[in-house]
Image (cartoon, rainbow, N blue to C red):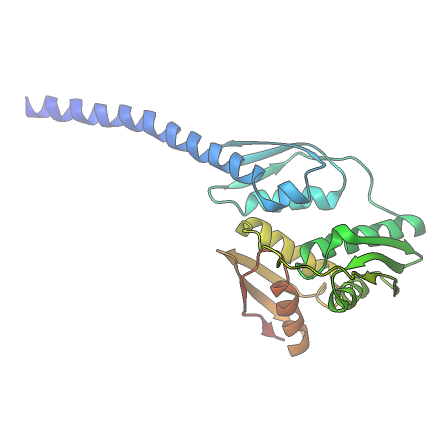
Length: 253
């Protein structure tokens, strides 16, 4: 009798496991899809793209159309950094070919400048008008302060491909009484922003930098050619939207 009872109990456990496991997987997959759609990157940088996401047992599939290869890569890396994701099958289609030639090169520089200013909390990309001709960037628009105006030009000048910057921005005379409210940004989006900011900036583009984020705290690891390059990587990372602090563990070659 005891043997029969033990077999019956074991059979019940097996049945329960076959029911509970898919339910847990389904909840995890639903959470992955929800988390992706609520990321800062998806809602800010990819909002104009047509992206569908599905997840099955932690394997994410991305389909739809995006405006450029950078958006395709950002979508994939944002998904890869989410909790519970095992792998990402990126089937996104790029709407337009990558820029080639002089005029297209200028357009590509403009995209990088625009995105970089959007990554940094100390600049205001939405109020900055950017035009590029033969590698020369012209900035127009409103800056909240002289410091913001100067930093906008400094960041633009450091973008790979930029030859010169003509800063025609005007400093707003309107006084603001309320300070900017810091948005609580998810770790995956912070990681992606830091990674692409370091890649777009000329002074850090060649660095082999690994970026990890935990509750807004960014850890940088990898190799820097010198102390200045390491310091610059940390400085740029600190000014990224959502970053609370930076733990710079990069080693100098």
